[in-house]
Amino acid sequence: MATTVVQTATTTATDSVDLSRFPDGFKTSGQHPPLYSQVRPYADFPKVHSGPTVWKADDYRDHPELWTHRFSDKELQEISIAADNFIQNGTSLTGISKSNFPLPNLSKRLEALRRDLIDGKGFFLFKGIPVREWDLQKCATAYMGLGTYLGYFVSQNGRGHVLGHVKDLGEDPTKTDRVRIYRTNARQYFHTDGSDIVGLLCIAKSLSGGESDIASTHHVFNVLQERHPDVVETFTTPNWYFDRKGETSTGEEEWIRGSIFYLENERSGNSPRVYARFDPMNVTSLARFNSGPNARIPPLSEKQKYAMEVFEKTCAELSLHMILAPGDIQFVSNSHVFHARTAYEDHPPGAVDEEGKPARRRHLMRLWLAAPESEGGWKLPYHDTLEKKRGGIQVNDQPPICPLDAE
Image 1 (cartoon, rainbow, N blue to C red):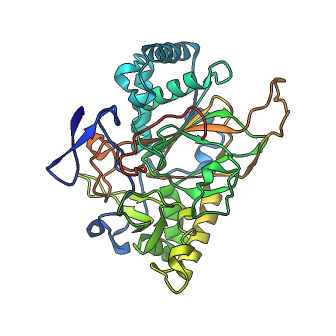
Image 2: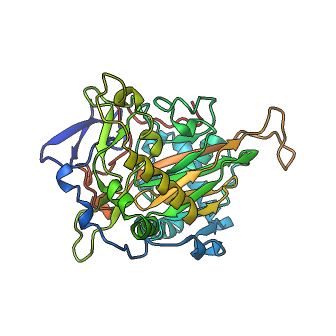
Image 3: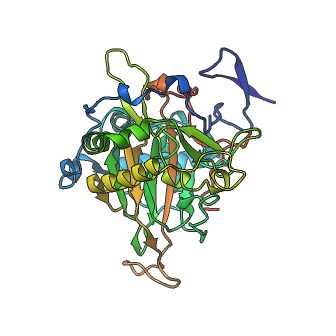
């Protein structure tokens, strides 16, 4: 068995990774509770957050040139050549990297974008990928190739999908204890995903709905501090439980206890930033563990329910709205941007689109990307903060896979 040595953030020992299962030599770290000794009390949090991560929707609503870029013909040619060459070489998509997806010109723009996603406004929209002309394999290859310049792919579910698919598979969104909402057409409340950066490539849009909203975490924080400091204190208290929905490795608990707002570890010469990790659908789905005579964890308190209600209303009030068209790629930082999605309705069978072609069901390819502390990422209060593939969802030794469509 071919192996490579991987250093972890918590030990000087080494772990061996089977290269036949993890081709790039790195395994997704997975879901973990915080280091409770590093969870700071509300009194340590700033009253007002400042810096380039604080923005208002009004700053961008009428100025798309500040956060969008349409790929030029020259840039698309560069992407297309890199994708074609990668496919012809026969390398698995799980082995794609900057070294085997060269973008000699566009790489400079992507490196600047990575810095802006991590330390700046935290969102951007590319336009113009020819998703109607390229098949799913080429779309996925181009998309993941671009992603390699922003971070490391981490698994998005227990099946090891490092290329995810946001698509309605007809699953029941009310079964929140076992259904992931991205596999339905239901509304998604403001939340963060389990990675540093999330990307969405729109392959096909819905008949109606499915629109995107984002809000600056630090603007939301400032407004809550001004209007509802009690809510911020509730969000900084590590007595929240988050459902793992059965995506656990052997011996792990079915939930994670933590806060919603954290303070980043101290940064040399800088104040620590407020970091958020929250998905309300993973908080309200724990009835099987927090109710009845055999309850193992406490139910949501009235304070927590109130805090969630205020949080959602505040995010909606402060959000920037956008509609993803086919060929658009949205990148968002989970560290300091909340995002949401409206409910949607797909095209009926036999429908045609505006070009007179058969209408395709709404389909977005999704990436979860890690930007570790060891490479300029946020200094997080988790044991895996230095690991290249921190975060994500890893179940036992499930290897990464890249399905070209939802399954």
